[in-house]
Image (cartoon, rainbow, N blue to C red; front, side, top):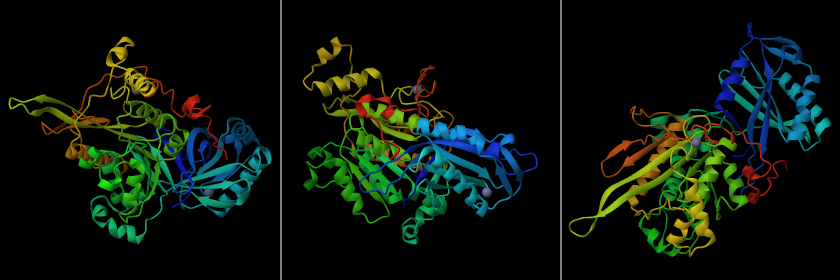
Length: 482
Ligand SMILES: [Zn+2]
Ligand SMILES: [Zn+2]
């Protein structure tokens, strides 16, 4: 499956559709949408640009030269200011309109309008430009792209993703009959559109061990169409107790690559890429991540989690983070006993709920400690204390059923984002819940959060204008407009 993808914030989708449907006599209306384009190439996956909507500019009445419920004509002159901004700010021009009475398909007039727009933008900004057209009709988005080098040719997008309280996909393709046969029992629970939507998604899994490997393998079986596996660590003997797909002969090999070859061998409809590097130090890993529709965090790495937390807001990527924790005491018989042990599933969305910092899952001091340890692996606890650093990691036991069950809960959380089915008890939060494996309960922590948090409150990272990747000079400049 190829083609570009469009991502809109839930609030942008609401504003845009309300405006398009606002004509008192039900005439067509139009708006410009300015997009950031992330041009992502990942080995093993089709090239797939992400267009992230950053700004909506409704066409003023004065720009419209004629309209009816079935047509609309407009003046090009007022749009030139937007063409200029696209060039200066490296944005892509999008033309959006509606068909109040249907059909949910582009017309011949749309074809002409788009060619005129692409030619005008190309003449001003150059042949390298790309262009997006979106149509709102019958409660559905239909979208396609064009390029300045061949304005007459249009390419349908793979899907339009709206990220609000949940994720809503529009314009996705039907999956193959072979795939539908594999997914028949799941379709019996959630319906055929759910199967198609999962098959359209590209999902990044960061950390491919105790939780990442069950998520990756079951996610592939459940019908996720593309997986990006990110982990540079090597498999150890002790991983044999819980890492899915791992054989003794794989010990010493890279986790992400081993998991990829296992998933490739399952025989389901999935394309998998493996990236053997860290997120916070390697631009290729971050680029591969930025190309995903959804991110799953399966790592103990605080610096990596901080990157994913920022990507939620900068790249509009829903992020599900899995963590495990517990406390082991010594029983009267001299053997360990579990005082408590839980799996945590956090769901971070750009406009809803708290970020990972506000949920208390990551702290600056834990990131600093991790970086200090990375710089100097021999640093002692005393030296860390002197520098006011503390560890967030306690050496948690690794228990297969707990890591695996937590990953399964996270996959079910992704299902619930795509097709809501859960009924939460009032005391359980949607953005963070714990599965207590000892008391057999599901509950939530009540964290206060930071009322000025740059991520989830002040929204400083929302639709971030990047001078370099996530504005971190260490990760280098992104050449998005290739
Ligand atoms: Zn039209
Ligand atoms: Zn926050």
